[in-house]
Length: 285
Image 1 (cartoon, rainbow, N blue to C red):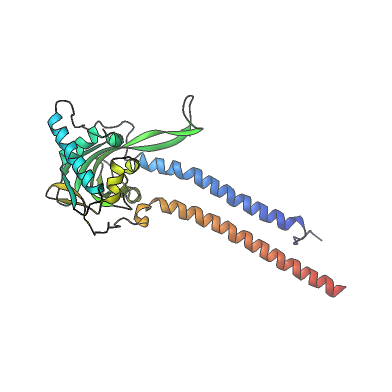
Image 2 (spheres, helix red, strand yellow):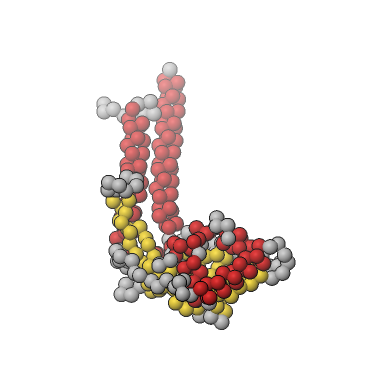
């Protein structure tokens, strides 16, 4: 008689282990495949070299620099002073570009982010945005065992400022890349840019963002304000912010859930089979 798999024989345990290993190999392989698949798609609308974007001149422009610094300091003092008076500042495209040029906290935007114009309902911004390219093994002198060469997203975005949990973010409505079509999945992931995330801990910018209650566009200017008694709008939801990347998490989660369900069923049927065998043994005795 050929050997049969019972709850006490090694065959049931081996079946569970083999199934577990197969699912584990699938999850590992899928997690390795995803970055390469994403890199293949990103390479279709990006380039290997950055585009040089204009930086607002500081030298020879001291009058405008001093005027902007004074306005920003006045707004900061009024917004964070704890008084009940309204604090408001209006910034044009030149003001925003000059702020990027002179502020150490906004250095990461310098040369990669340039406001072309401000319309009544949107910001028109030229970008040369750095993205991670195809994963590869690190070479000598590079950090970590695995790294990637950068890719650059050069194009024009149309967006608007919004407030998200005491942080000023840029909500992207559309992205134009010359000569290329950008997939909708990437646009969903790119829909909210936390361009001031690095400034949250800045002693000057961070406290101001924390008290803002309004960020809007009007008459070719961006208006930031703290209105006493006004609650900051929560216009960007977690679902919107995590759109795009959530698909990968769902697939991985489904694979893990499948493994747990399969393992649970194997254990359940194994215990059930064991109980039946013990009842048959007691009956025969």
